[in-house]
Length: 168
Image 1 (cartoon, helix red, strand yellow):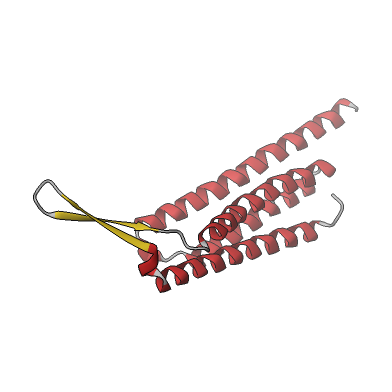
Image 2 (cartoon, rainbow, N blue to C red; image 1 turned 180 degrees about the vertical axis):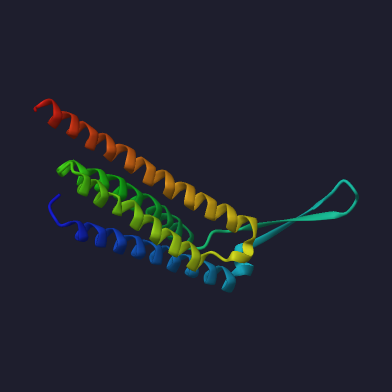
């Protein structure tokens, strides 16, 4: 790796914060636009039901900020995830030592901390089971990433130790 570890960790942290802020910005714009143009974006269809009453279906047109919000949300998920996996493994491959192994774990730790902080700042705890499900998925996903990095980098470390032992 060309730059020091702190540079990559700072870039990861900045990218995660920036992409999450951008996604939240588009979410707020989408919500505000829908609230101010709700009548134009909503269509209603009334239909007869089996018990001689009427039901109503509502259809919502997407706002101009819907697709930028979706793209920024996907980017905020996939780009940092890919960078965490790539940089932690690439950092371990440059020099296979215990110290490098432990330092390579900083990537998934930073990823986890930023996601947890963002989750607690943005998601409303009054959602009930949806909040608990989101928290469970967050911890499971971040834990899976951490375990994956530990396993892959452990394999690199063990192979290096075996290679060094075979040369003695």
